[in-house]
Image 1 (cartoon, rainbow, N blue to C red):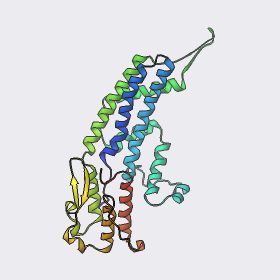
Image 2 (cartoon, rainbow, N blue to C red; image 1 turned 180 degrees about the vertical axis):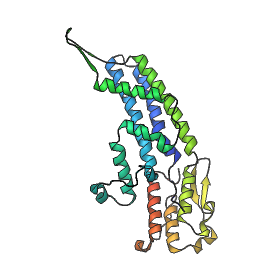
Image 3 (cartoon, rainbow, N blue to C red; image 1 turned 90 degrees about the vertical axis):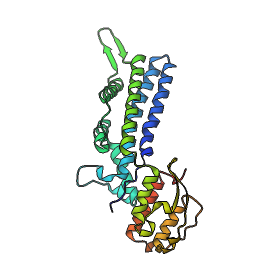
Image 4 (cartoon, helix red, strand yellow; image 1 turned 180 degrees about the horizontal axis):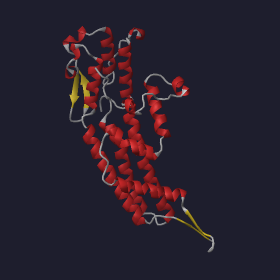
Length: 282
């Protein structure tokens, strides 16, 4: 059985929705500021928010899909990163290092390729806004030597508001495309996929036999104790206790961890990794 993809669609959408809310707030803020410097500052912030959003979506997706980090067969890992981390933290640090070193244009180039979604219709407009922001930052000063004057470039409020509206359109479109593409990756479905990967015994074949599930709120609200649970092995019972401890005060009877096989250790790390991103219950 292949390792399950442990992404949660709601987690993937968090950076997009958070940025969308911030852009809406900036539209209100920019109208309350009368000076060009303040308005321009908010415009620059808006572009930076969207740039960061792309990288955060990639960061989250790649840590659960490391095979898509690069098309190359090998990946270079620094010695410091290798020594400092263990197991999945190596992977997360590798993704962080890759994303942090990546330019905006590089991240935009691979964003749609990796996620395999269609580009929003107004992407060209978004790219032109970003280029204009770069001009403001890097080529802002205009000097007329004959006249002895120094001027600076400022976008007018109409351009800023139009740009923010384009960002809202872009982010909403992106949100919808990603949701449609990854909607099956709910919290419960992702936990179920990891469950079947972890517990391969026929006694754990039915996820619903062990958990009370609230599908409406996409959460687990308690656990069940099926009769055939006593047939589980020691390592399976240990892992079941780990899972149950996330939804209750269930006591975990710890084994000698050195007795856990490599596959079980891997499953334990995957569960811990997923637990860093979600609670099993709400």
